[in-house]
Length: 304
Length: 309
Image 1 (cartoon, each protein chain N blue to C red):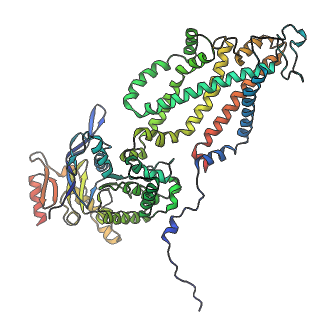
Image 2 (tube, each protein chain N blue to C red; image 1 turned 60 degrees about the vertical axis):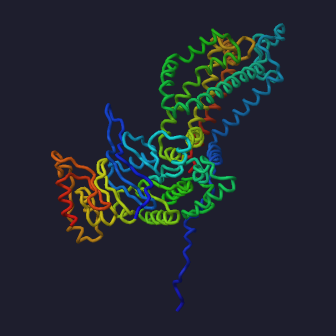
Image 3 (tube, each protein chain N blue to C red; image 1 turned 90 degrees about the vertical axis):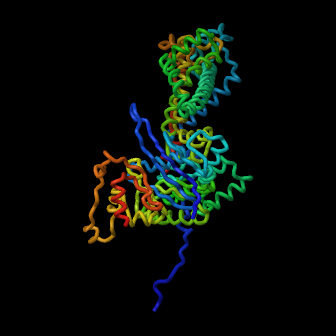
């Protein structure tokens, strides 16, 4: 009779083997991100706007104080055409040059301010959430700062120190990081006492490494969310300030100032108003959607 | 035979702030742990057994008493060098493998965390070799070093936790219910692993558990703790043969029996504090027989001595 059963060797190690392919955090983040078609479209839009805004003004040499065509009446209020893609304004300047110069200023201000706010906010917030003594002091300071409206602080600062590109950035960042730091503090406090952090304490891990290896990696998604919210917020704050006529000097091109100038032409020459507004909206929306999708993708719960 | 004491706990009290006052979680804890043995702390949920373990590893601050490790008091402010020595020599295996591993770090980082903190290697090659060796000791594979904790099963994760503690080459390991979060089918695997490692490395365990059958299997001596107080301490055999304190007896009577007939006939003893009359005679922790301690007052001791005869 044929032997139907036979003995086999047991390989203890075989049951330990993990068959799944290697997991890589950042690879999974990008894979999840590129699943969203809207995000890809917005990323392309953001890249195009960003590149044009950074490169075009270098060639156009647009200067809001200088109107070389002011005497040529035929160049005033030209609607968008093949020569001037976005048309011309009341002093014969090309709106195309003006818009990109303004966008460049807005993007630069928002990127620099966000970078400063986020760096300071995360650094202070991480330590704030970790140290109970520091928390007591910082909470009192925060309560004072948080109860003064942000726009009031910025406006007052600008009246005191004057207008200008770097002065505006200073005004936007002097208290701007506090909110971020407070938010990070709360997040750190939630994670701080989890069991794996007790383990690290039992292994003698110093606090600095606890923050960088045990806490901050868990906050990637939260930080990217903050980033994607902060950039549009700063862009619109800058526009509001320029619209109100504070913040930047007349020599700095700015979308907000442009919109405020062209508001009077909203009925007669609507393109003068709507083109800068839609560029401003596209910048905010595309950066926001890209950031939000990236924040979702950087949450490992979405990787499965 | 004189045995070397590795850890002594004297009159330990641990309390936590509760409202305006304090809640005393552990009181008058006294015991010695000898080198190379497995000492078990058993008690119900909330009895303070984990608190004792955590105050030995200095996560929970103590409010009274002394914890002496190798002749040095460790529950006070230590110099940086002493602190390092204590951290290196006392390690802990945590209860829940699901929460005790850093999900955003690779196994390589998790296991070598202690090595990095103490610079216990000369080159990166030596560190890697140590990690692989320590993984092999707990039955895991070299290929696991680049993996993340979420890719492992509960039993594997607990073994990672064991490897992480073992790589420090500690003298004392506090195992805080190391198998209670595991599936029944792999409990034996982890327990046997712990026993093997103890024999190979001459480790001392403080084993915290609520499962008496497990404790009977692994430990040499057992302390029974009830509402923050150690009520009885004895060798495993003595405790199971001659349980004296009514709480110990009620615990033992609750052990399920794998035989339906005797299980039905089993008489459960219910323990309440009303069994004791401490109005006249104050109780204390008395060595009633060699190595057998019980928390009792004079009349009770008389009674217990009768039982021992």
